[in-house]
Image 1 (cartoon, helix red, strand yellow):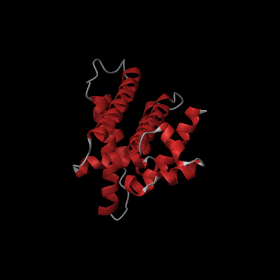
Image 2 (spheres, helix red, strand yellow; image 1 turned 60 degrees about the horizontal axis):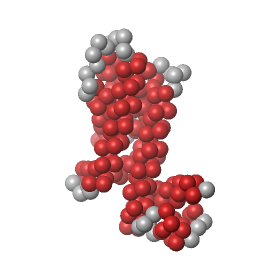
Image 3 (spheres, one colour; image 1 turned 135 degrees about the horizontal axis):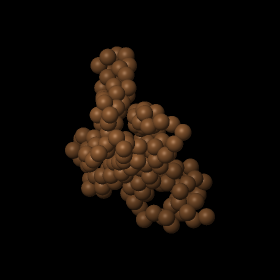
Image 4 (tube, helix red, strand yellow; image 1 turned 135 degrees about the vertical axis):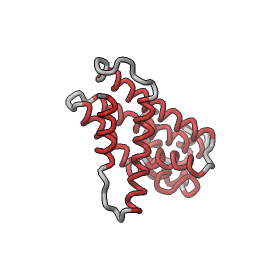
Length: 191
C-alpha cells in the first residue's frame, strides 16, 4: 500500500509540476489531487524539492519503459520500431513535460547538477536500449558496430524533436518528413 501511495503522489506531482512548474505548484494541490492530507506527503518525501526531483526521475523511468516497449515489440520489423521510436520522441513535449522541461534547462545554462544527472541517466538508458537492439538485430550485418552509433541515434532523435518545433515556426507548420529522412539515413548507414 505504501508503494502504491508513493506512486500516486509521484504521478499527481509530475502532472502538477509539468503544468505549473516547481514555483507555482503547492503540496496542498498535490495532496488534494491524491485525496490525502499535506502531512501525508511528508511521510514519503522530506521536502517539495525532493518530491520535484523524485517526480522527474519517476517520469524519466516511465519514459524509458515506453522506449523499451517500442524496441521489445518483436512483431514489428526493426524499421517500424525505429520509426515508432522517432515518432514517440516527437511527442515528449506533450506526454513527458518534466523530462522535456529538464532537457530544455540545458539550453538555458541554468541546469543544476541533479538535473544534469537525470538527463545523463536518461541518455545512458536510451543508448543502452538502442545498442541492444542494434547488436541483436544487425549482429550478422555489422562486423563491429561503432560504439558511438547508439548515441548518435539517441542524440539525433532528440534533435528531431527540436527540429520539428523549429520547422513548425519556419515553414508555417508545413511538415517535412524528417522521421523518414532520418530513418533512410540510418538504413543506409546500417546496410
